[in-house]
View 1 (tube, rainbow, N blue to C red):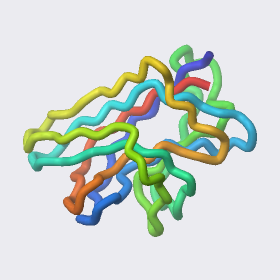
View 2: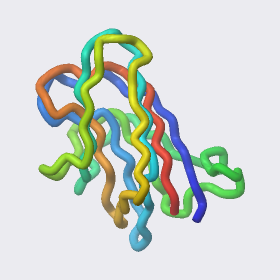
View 3: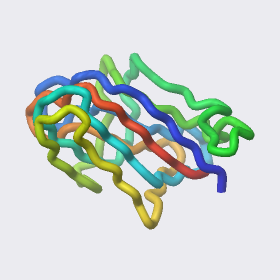
View 4: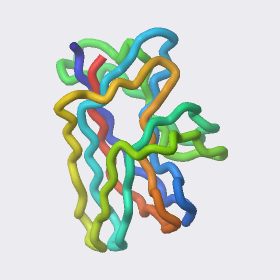
Length: 150
C-alpha cells in the first residue's frame, strides 16, 4: 500500500472550543485512505490542548496543502485519492462529537507528540480527520505532519 506524508504549519485558532487547526481530507468519490501517524510540535510557548476527531464536512477552506509526487515515500506518484491538508477556513469544518485521541501540551516550544496507530484509522471517501482544540483556548501555530496509506 503506498504511503504518503504531508507537513504543514498551522495557524493560531480562535479561542473557541472545538475549533479546527487542520483537517486531512479525502475528496475521492470511492476509495478510502488510512491514517497511520499524526505528529504535532509546538512553535510557541503556551499550553495547548489537542484532539483528533472525524470530519464529515470540509468547511470553506482558505489554506490548503495539496500533496504531490514528493509526498509519496517512494516518490513514484501523487496520491490517487487527491487527499489534501486544510489548515485555515472562513467557515469551519464539521466534526463528529467523539474524540479519537486527545493530548495536553506544556508551555514549551518544541514540545509535542507522535500518535502512531497500530491499526490505521480508515478515512472513507468524502470524509476527513479533524485536528483541533477541544477547549476554549487558542491553539497556537504548530508543525503538523500526517502520514497515511492508500
